[in-house]
Length: 366
Image (tube, rainbow, N blue to C red):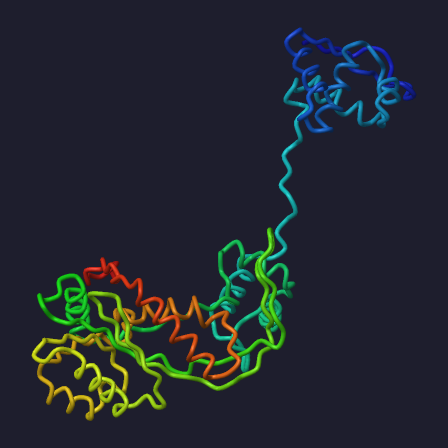
């Protein structure tokens, strides 16, 4: 590649045009750019300008042929002459200067990580912008607040639930006891997991839904009519997977011990019974403790506070909710109870025990 000044620019007297001569390698490279289907339009234009200049055309002739201004031809012809192929690349740009300094960003973060003004419960980008504007810092738009928070992966509008574990000294001892009962039950005993599921709503949709179609999920009506509620108490045989349920009118200790009386009557006399319970009020009431004291073959394994998920009956209730309740349509309370009974009976026909693998050790360092 060789460059020199000679000739005249088309239509601009007194200004020398740069003559460009290319070696074969550079020429083929530029021709390849003009023929590429993936090259950007501006890259193709610059390559064509240089190729035309290498043929000895004036700036004006090149501008006319490529439908650009003479100044555009002169710019890229001159940059190529000075820098070679690198001169056809875009020059570095520092970009738009930052409007807001670090102090404004700190003010935004400080607002987003503090309590919002009364009576709001969560922040929005607009309220954060207003909060910052009320300080000594410059006014900032809600969209700019959003960009700054996005860069920091800070989402004050999102709230995740959290339950603080009660720091009971025997927490992990209780967990290990329940898990050991599931994984290594004593030979010849009955292991029951018992709990209540209360306030199950009997609701009917005001209008029928639509079944699923290819590419479209099933649809169900939002509006519904209420027909009362029902409550269940259930006992899961951990070793077989079978469940016994009963509809209850009240969730109290008297109802709970009455259910235990039924179980005690149908289980063979003298057979040892181990029962997993959470810390519900009906389970820990004085009346229940008195009943347990008079029935020595019943041994209770208590789940720790805030760990009722260790009670296997909760797995059964979860499946019942997904299969029957969540999207169910119930014309009355009796209809709800009938469908729950059908579910329990049909599931018992193919009952299998849950495969419990958790051994009761902490899942991660706390």
